[in-house]
Amino acid sequence: MEQFKIGDASSYDSVAASFAHFTNLVTRPLSETMVRMAELRSENRILDIGTGSGIVALTAAKHLNGPGSVTGIDLSDGLLAEARQAAVQAGLADKIRLEKADAEALPLRDKSFDVVLSLFALLHFPHPDKAVAEMFRVLAPGGRLVIGIGSQPPWNSVKGWTHRLSRIPDFFSLKAGKLLLAPAHLNQIVERHLPAAAAAEETELAQDHAYRSARAVKLIRETGFQDVRTDWEGHHLVLDTALEFWDLQSTFSSLARKRLRTAAPAQLDLVHKDFERQCADVIGRGGKLVYHYAASYISGRRPR
Image 1 (tube, rainbow, N blue to C red):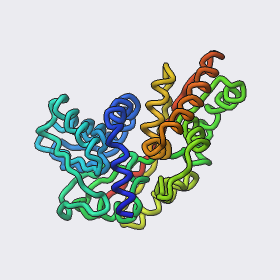
Image 2 (tube, rainbow, N blue to C red):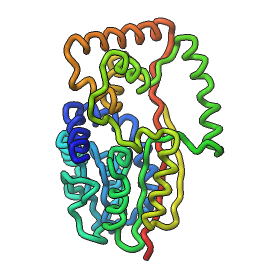
Image 3 (cartoon, rainbow, N blue to C red):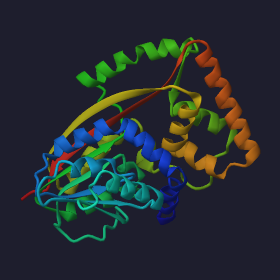
């Protein structure tokens, strides 16, 4: 599992600039929601776990007008470099400290943070129970936790029904050959042309699409967090060109990103040709290239 974490993190290094670009494009509203849920105060000591290119850390730091600070941790050297550059460009380098660290074994003192944030990171941890236990450990009594994971809304909820109704037009557009959806589109092409590696490409929790959110809620409660609450937020992005559609999917999809890294040139050529043909067909019919993305939020407090 240690090898999985190292390999997963390093798979982002070569696409770090693309990751930062698309994260800034799509993730900003999600990070703003997390910060609102955390009810930040100017003196808060904030930890951002799985900071990536720093979008959550930057968003949180902008809300600190007093002595508070943000520490962001990640295992990807490439993403940390992007985060450091973004902090400098935003004039927030004095508020943000960025470190390479393992979320399942944080090199941080007990009860040393007031708020822990983590967006789209939990599904990358082979032992999510260890990561959540570490979040609990470093939080001060009364400290607040907000995490976000990629997930569908609860099935039998207002947002669940609203979401499913909103996706009905997608069904007909797909049937008419006027829609391609990321990341499923590239994943299907990659699976057709590139064999799976012997090593795991995703964690067990990430593979559990139907129940990952409910399992995360259960885990957070069992760790000892109180006042556990949930919410969900969804958005979509229409990509203008096939090149942008490729860049987004080959960056954000763990399956595609990892298999494309190790593919032979001839295999890559087949994938590219298949991808370009399908995009040209859909665009030629007046169709769209779309990325739907969402976060299930889970918040809680460490007891006083």
